[in-house]
Each structure stands twice: as C-alpha cells, then as structure tokens.
Image 1 (cartoon, helix red, strand yellow):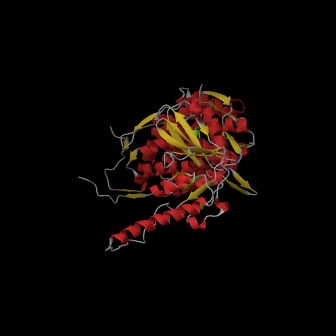
Image 2 (spheres, helix red, strand yellow):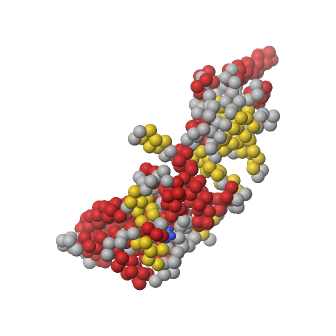
Image 3 (cartoon, protein in one colour):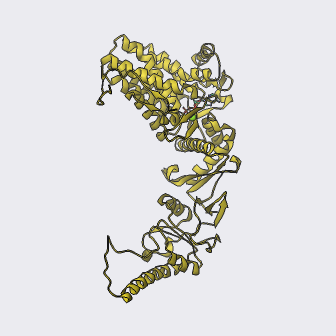
Length: 527
Ligand code: ADP
Ligand code: MG
C-alpha cells in the first residue's frame, strides 16, 4: 500500500481565472478534510506508511502532512503552511490547516458570485488585523517562574497527543530542559533548544525512567578497553583535530630507495604522535574527546598517562559538551591553554544500557546544555514521544519569551468569530460579506472539537455563541465530553503567540491562493 495521494482535477494543463481559484479551494479543502479528525483531545490517530516502508503512528497535523504525497500545487502550499507553523512555534499545525481550508471554503460562494478576489483579499486582511487585536484582548499574562502553572499549560498543549498518559512526565522533562538552556542577560534572552537540547532514545525500560540529565549523554565508549570508565571531576579537553600521524598536504608521493629510509619515515610518524601526546599530557587531562580519530599509538600513550579518550564525536555533540563542561574546543594541540580545559563536569561514566555503551558526562554545575534520555517500550512509541516532546519544548519556549495566554478549547476562536461578526455590520459595501465569511470560518475550531468527541455540533455551538454574545469570552468546549465549559475552571490555556501565528498563517495563505488566477503546468502530461 502506498501513502495516500490527493489528485485534483489534473485533466487540463492550464486553468484560468475562477476555474483556477475554484480548483485551488477544492484542493485546500481536501487537505483540511484529511486532518480534520486529528484536532483536539479526542483526536484519532493516523497510521501512515512512509516511502521507506516504515510506519508512522501520529495525530500531529504536521507529521501527517509531511508523509502524504500530493500533486496539486495548492495542496502542496497548504502542507508548506503546516511546516512553517511547526518551525515558527511548534504547535497549532492542525489548527492552521483546518482554519485556512475553512476560510477558503467560506469565501468560495463570493468567488462564484464574481466578487473580485482583490476585494475579498482586502476584507480578509482587515479581518486579520481585527482578529489579532481581539486575541490580545482575551489573553491574560502568566508567571513563568511558577512551575505548576507552567506544567499545567504545557499539558494543555500536548494533552491532545497520543502520549497524554505520560503527559505529566513529558511536561516536567520539557520544562526542566528549557530551563537548563535558558540564558538571560539583561534584555537578551536565549533559548536554543534545537542546538543545546538533544533527545537520546534508548528502547527498553519504562517511560517513567526518562530524565533530563544535568549534562550530556553520548552513544560512545572509550577507545581502549583498559581506559578508565569512571572519573570524578574530570579535567576535559575537547579537540577537533585528530590524534594521528599528520599526513602530507594533498597527495604526497615519497620515493624511497633504501630500507633505512622507510624505517626513518615510520619513526618520524611515531615521534610526531609522541610529541602530540606529550603536549597534551602536560595539561594533566583525565578525558580527551575529539571529533576526529585517535590512532593506536596515541591510545597507547594516553592510556599510559591515565587518560580516557573518546573519538569521532559529532560536532554538534562537542558543542553541547563545551557548553555543559565549560571547555573550549581546540583546533591545534599547540594552542591548548589551561583556560580551555573543562572542569564543570562532576562525573564521567561509561555504562552499558541494553547492548550498547553510553558515555555520561553528568553532575555539571549550571550546564546550559543537556540531553533528555527517553526510555520506552518500542521505537515507534519513542519516536512519537520525541515528536511531542519537541512540541512541548516549543510551547515552553514560547511562553518564556512571551508570557501571555489565550483560552483554549475553541474559546479564543469563538470570541474572534463573535466579535468579527459584530464589526462586520459596520463595514461598507460588498467587502462586508467576505469579512463576515471569516467570522463564520473561525467557528470551525469549536465545531470540529465538538464533532471529534461525538457531540451535537449545532446545538452546542449555539449555546457557546450565546455565552460569547453576552461577553463571556473564556467559555469553550470541553473536548472530552463535548460540553460548553468555562476555561477558567476547565483549565485549557494556550500561548498567545501560537494563536497569533496560526491565524496569521491561515489568513495569509488563503489570500495567497485567492490571488492566483492562473495555474500553468510546466510538466508535460503523460498520455
Ligand atoms: P494542533 O496541531 O493544532 O496543536 P491539537 O490536536 O493539539 O492540534 O489541538 C489543539 C486544539 O485543541 C486547540 O484549539 C486546543 O485549545 C484544543 N484543546 C486541547 N485540549 C483540549 C481539551 N481538553 N478540551 C477542549 N479543547 C482542547
Ligand atoms: Mg497541539
């Protein structure tokens, strides 16, 4: 079986004017329909077969769209959307697609009624500006130093995912990891989870055993079995040069006529390595980690000097070790200085987990970089946990940067919908209709939440609308029971940035697709 394919109206090579817009809208709606059932806490999972034959089990909008194969250009652009959303803020990928699809669907009748797309686009842009203001009005600030409030918040964001039964654990992990790499100096704030948090998945064990290390984990063993595998407070040297005989520049040819000359060449190689190692040993390191190789002879000298060595460590890992241990990566051994040596690590230890060796550099004081060690029953589960942990960290990061929250469960969307509908009345001319269409489109989020848990959309939606019309903008949908609840009690809140971003992306992409009036294929059709 192949991954699902969305084919749309590819019978003609050129589509113009309204035909092009209609075909774009249809394609965008088709994509939105695929992932409609993946929104909210009662979301269904999708099982996808990737081209390599592996399976992906997920309900994350972005992860699904990444795997499916579409041919319509508009559908492709929708998928691009969810990727942008994922990269920018890490959550809300399903929301953005459903919203964009619905906005296009709602404006469809006006395209058919021959209102000029430019008028529609202008109305959409106006609606966007107003919607962003409304979101800001209904949002409240949060205290980022209150751990339990933060955890509740992260939980609301990943509670919709398959891993929800371990969500408490995941939230703690993500909060701890983000706090580890959080740097604040005056006005400058940095949280670079991509560079400095690494997730290491080791199948086996219980999910509860997962932890954020106060340091770094490497999938490596010492180069020589006799080297020490446990050192307290090690002095660490990080290199990105090899501990090997230095070869000649580019291809060197040496012609030798006598046997003594050959011996001399070997001797020079050995001497060079000896000098390298002696220079290194002067600094009395306990642990030498290099991104390149370590030759047998060098291992011998290091072993004699009581030094453990790790080789072929990835650049990115080396950077993390540097941050966690306070060492500086050195390019040439001649340049090594006392200040380059890392001393902030409390314990170096090599452990056998399963049938692989792992190096732990832990008990670092103020590490500023870390590894999250994930345990779990199978690789599929670990992969899904990893994806969700990424989302959780993105949410944490966003809130640390902009500590403001909007009510979830479709409450914010409903508030936007109701308030836009009020404003629509004051808009002059035909632009009023597409503006109203955006207002209607926002209802799709609470409606889908109701539908996904088997509720009665029409009745419950009108209850919700009534609440909002009387000014209670924290009311939304209880996604488990499909009832109208107050988010102040139910407790689902989401970072304001995510709401901003998803609405911005959805409306802007809808505008983009409406602006297209010609689809010309550069690909020749096969007979
Ligand atoms: P996305 O990929 O867009 O983040 P999700 O499947 O995570 O999609 O769903 C997010 C939506 O579900 C948000 O609008 C959020 O407010 C809502 N939501 C999350 N948990 C609940 C809940 N327990 N009850 C109702 N709505 C919820
Ligand atoms: Mg989510």
